[in-house]
Length: 320
Image (cartoon, one colour):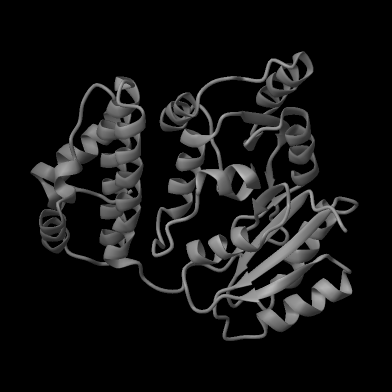
């Protein structure tokens, strides 16, 4: 029976021309590792599935292709989790591809038995992470502390470059929100952080793979669906209030920084796509999102200015 240390989950749709480079890039990273490749197709209308099957055979990879129907990326990732068999798993996205991180993350996971592993974005972070590993003084900050650091822009965690212990996800029943197309990744990361017992930063410095990364822009307008991101953050806020009700700092950061920022970013998307100011303001009022534009001590000055201009002289507001 083959041992699988890592499941590599790759959601794809209509990437017939790019799938070869993406899979070859990942295969090079995973060379010599006990890894399986799970390509989940989301209703491609081109030859993506055929190309993926042929490449798995050509590169002699352990893995398979799943046709998941014309659904969301979140649904495809859930299918990948359910079909995975590795001790750990990672997600690879063609539009945000990183190189040379898999083996380093696996080494960190082996040394720490962490539920959640993420990388470093600078030499300074990398050296600090290595010192913690050598001394075995794994940073025992809670997930709430990590979340505060993210909200304060002190650390950056990208779902395209994380590694998760599969048993942790299954035991805690952590999945993506199937019907969500915007904000599903951030919600998943936040939910994992708030639930994980051990979180480890790998010394591995993450770098984008600009050679094989998909460079095509978005194919259609987003419209009001962008506020699915706000709904996702509201679900996390409910989780925080239930599980971290004594953490006033985190609650205020989320209420007065993260939620209003997410709403304002949604406003920017609608305005850039051509929606009128009155139409956007009317939608926010009806949906109740305007009530989330509250500020406090935790709100940064730039966001306060954006909210003030939007509320008082919306025709002067310039989308970021």
